Image 1: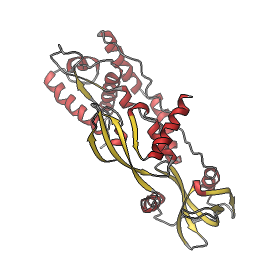
Image 2 (image 1 turned 90 degrees about the horizontal axis):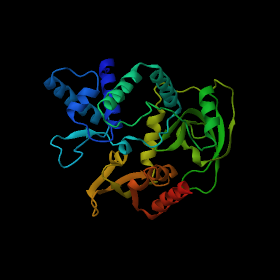
Image 3 (image 1 turned 180 degrees about the vertical axis):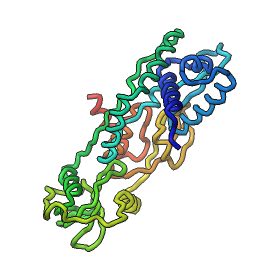
Image 4 (image 1 turned 90 degrees about the vertical axis):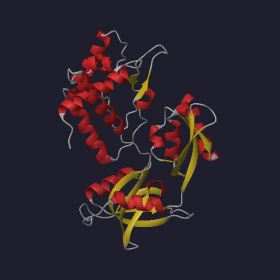
Length: 320
């Protein structure tokens, strides 16, 4: 069910309020700062409990605590470090949709609800930090030289030819492909289509394409079969790939929420305030090393050694 505009404004104001305050806010302070809550305190408490559950379900880290040992009432906050996300890589169609949503948000009246929460916090004498909302700048990034011509070929429905080095092979082979789609999975790019030489659907990883991609037919000469799901094809191909492994990470307890969603196991570390996570990853993925490095000092790679060195190298490069 779609969320009502009133509820959307209230939740947005609540997030801005808890994210901007530099300390824990009590229920009474939140009620005074966030528009949309009922006058009755009992009704407010019931609605606030539902809102807290909804924010947690959305993956927004909501903390409970006190600002000092003398505080009688617990408060709430959203830690900025945990709320902020690493760079998000979007697939082309997703980037278009997020771009449209961003423009719509910037022009919407929802921004007034966010600003109102900050004004009320400051009026109540609470130090509130400015936040730029929503600050969405979708960026499509890929370092693969083959991406451009393959994406054009998919768009124009043109067959292509390229030189490809398959996993476990040292020599490249020429492939003739009718491309159906270019998608990203776990930070790597793939093209899916009909391999003319093998007479079957095939998945090719863009980083294994050597040299230029050539157009070998006219626009409109490729037909995508009904019911084709290129994302499902890449998923099935990827999970069957032997190039997968697990890594052991030491993660600060109030960080790494994205990693925790995909962990295989978790246990407290010997050092207070840290956890030990085991996470599956694509063992030959440069993107994974970049992703782990984006957490900075909150994530430490313990194993394997090559991944640890890759992350350290990226951190040293960032410092330089």
